[in-house]
Length: 180
Image (cartoon, rainbow, N blue to C red; front, side, top):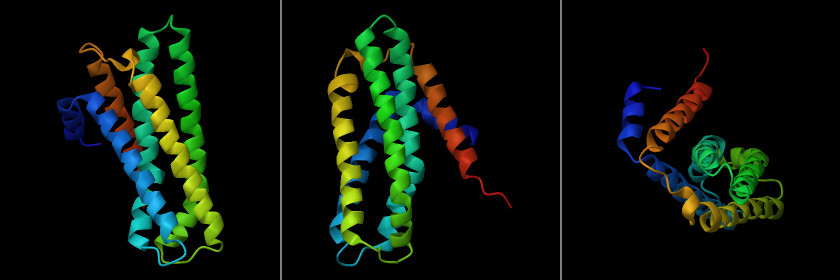
């Protein structure tokens, strides 16, 4: 990662970065829905390639960013059993999202190179399950972790959150390097 990226992350409110990631997840769900709607017709391969990239790389980053925020909440709310249970549940669901994403990679990869899927109805069902599940999860997080007092990150919390977000991006960049 370029040191300038860390400066850029530090220049933006880290909570805003997490919230933008959540907006992108919602937009990705809309894109999955559009792909599911196109399956019986002609699916745009570039569109599928873009959403494949989101589910392969961006979704894990967004979830890691949320979990960085959760770690701060967990420390601050150490005595709050409800907060701990909500965070644990959110992280468990993040792992399930990763499982869904892995199941979709083959279908999206085929569509991204212009191939048709073997069973459009089954693929459409998988896509719909994935985006509906993620939408429900985001809504649940809004009500529980992001909508309440738990998410109130103080000025003292922001440097630690910024550092974790920078770390998440370095980890992603190192996983994306091509070995020649």
